[in-house]
Length: 223
Image (cartoon, rainbow, N blue to C red):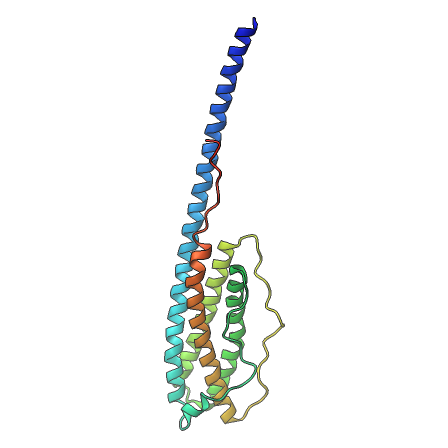
């Protein structure tokens, strides 16, 4: 076999290898794009569910505050203007989306013991048939559901990044209170939670453009 024939076979081999490599790369790129599109859709669906539930919970928190004030008798407006300590901060913390979503989750967890305490206090102050007790039970259950949805959303976006444990240990509850202090405490908890939910809805709308539309950069210059 002379040099010309060898060169011809070598060129044919290289053309075949190049074609095969191109096909494989195209398949890999298409597969990557399909996976990315699927994740974006899953992210969008989960975010939409989370946002919808947060808005519903926020609406219920507004109604709950009205019911709370109506059930506290005289000076209901005054008791809701007093400030107290040991109530979770309504502001969401963190710089990265993962940190801010985690902050939403830990805040939801932090409010639950306060809802329980307010319910226990109001059980002593209200009739068993009071609509306030029903609404307090509902807001607590709704918050647990929202925390679970936020957790699921976090796992979809950051599957390899465990959700951090809440900082600072167990939630600090106030010491024993008199009746006036209990009324003040309950209203502050509910008002702060409503403010927090407003921040959550705003944050989720911001996060949407950051985490659910990410695209994996693909270098196609070799095509």
